[in-house]
Amino acid sequence: MLKTNSQPMIISSFVNPIEENHSVKNKFDLLQKIRQRLDEIEINNRQFAKLIAKVIPAQCPFERDIIVFGRKIGHIPPMCKLNPLYEQFVGLRFRALCYLVDKCGEDIQSYC
Image (cartoon, rainbow, N blue to C red; front, side, top):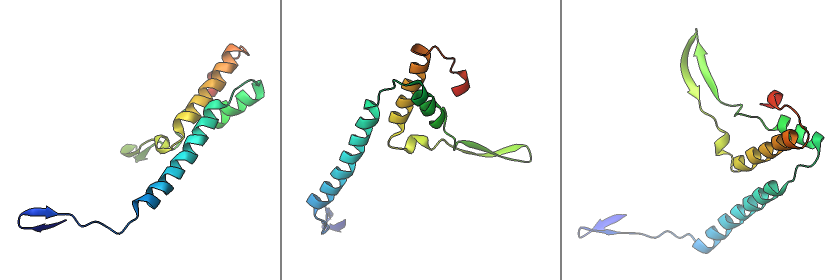
């Protein structure tokens, strides 16, 4: 931004906004399709439900406290929420656990 005569002057860039928006739109469309596919997965098999419950962790495995000589000097926050498909994976795990409890009558404490 340049100022001339006390008024801001905006200099436009030489980027074609149509191409830029088109490529961004395709990326979001792909993620939206993957989200939709993950939300559509039905759990109707005990072995599949157990696999899902074991593969998808109950909490973020990257969250850590940094302890040196018995003192906490730092904390690494959970990074899983940065994953654009986080909500879908959590929902899929929840549906698998509900299937195991409701349909199979299993105790899921070992999965939590």
